[in-house]
Amino acid sequence: MSDTSVHTLAVADPSVEIPPQPFPDVDSQGFWDATRRGELAICRCQRCRAWMHPPLERCRGCGGETAFEPIGGRGRIHSFIVMHRSSVPGLGPPPHVIALVEFDDTPGIRLTGMLVGVAPSDVEIGAPVQARIVDVPGGEFRAPEFVPVFGDGA
Ligand SMILES: [Zn+2]
Image 1: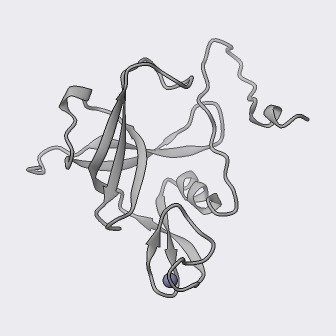
Image 2: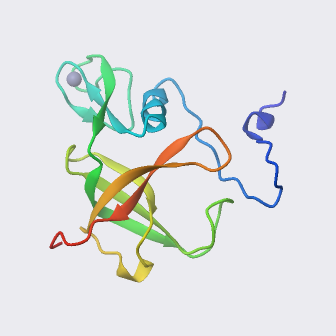
């Protein structure tokens, strides 16, 4: 089996485009295990309680062991881009808003994801959003995406 065949997925309908699939490693496996349960989880030091992303096996501050802990997924848009042409298959018709979100539960920790449910021209830095876990088409994975939170006085 060649390396590229690992990522090839058999689909019944060849017209269905499949997006790239996550490729968990020893550091990120806990993140994907959590999304499978419908949770968003961030790596946290079990000794000094520091959050860290990308995840690490050991804390960069104190060397303590880390584990993934669920967070609420509420945050604010730190930055964003609008993709007007799709560069990967399976995302649906553009435009797509890709947001960098900083979470209320974990100051300084930011995660990138699709922002849905809002027109690109209406997206604002600082606007409140909520992560939700959705199926990644074509495989066994689930991943976070973000939706706007309205009525927050942002
Ligand atoms: Zn630590």
